Image (cartoon, rainbow, N blue to C red; front, side, top):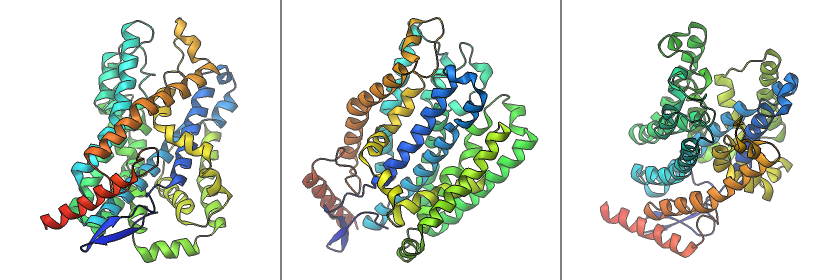
Length: 403
């Protein structure tokens, strides 16, 4: 599958064309929706609006935003890996991990350095275990009792980054080892296993006996299906005939039906003041996303691809990192002034923009230089199209010479 990408051949080897970049602006729109859901949740939870319980329940959209991030990640990562295999005949794990490290680690570590410095200065409270578990990506398995200072609010969102990193360690290697056909069944089987385990442990509390107090919905072993089923959807749509049939037969009313089926259980969760997760939810979100990517172009697609949504989507990772610092109030500190809306919201966007402009984007470009991707991506990440084309040709020559 070559999504939004045309190719030509060089001595029988597929090489990316410069006519298209492989960039799917619709996915930036979905990233914007996901991060706005998280921001809305925290803006209400940590402000004076928290005195209105009904409003808090109605705006408890953070878990849905993270679930959407997981679905996007599984769908996109698997799609890009399949594109690479289709074009060059193999998947470079080295290249994948170099690009992922340059994409994920620098902004995440910089945020931790900042809050670590603020903690040393006595402005906020961050415990050593709190900090190191985030650096080493096991924040979602940190026992609450190990957080001896504060309550871990400035790093609690690193649980989702830990889940993503665990997924990155598992899935690309599984795809290379099993191949596309068997990887589809591996992902589906593992997703079902995770779902069964989640239901069993939710009622039996077996895991809680060993590590008491962990947030149930933050553990990798109960959330991995949210990413795996995005991979399953990408593997199914990797077939040209399936993708063509999907594009022709998927109607707008089907998309709205999918959205309705997802939102209906969320209303039940609101009425019960609880939140759970299901295999149905994990399977539905990638379908809703794929409907806007490969389905008919509607006003929803145009909204997702609008300039404002794409801008927020590009900042979404940095927004997610910095929103926690300016959402959780540091009571008794002058720093709390910066955490009150609307100033807190302005600080979130300012720090996110600075992070994206001076850390995230330069390191992504560096990662692309060290391990050139199949396609250029967004224009702001790969401005030199001729150099990218040259790189693609060189990769094809190298593949031919090695074979």
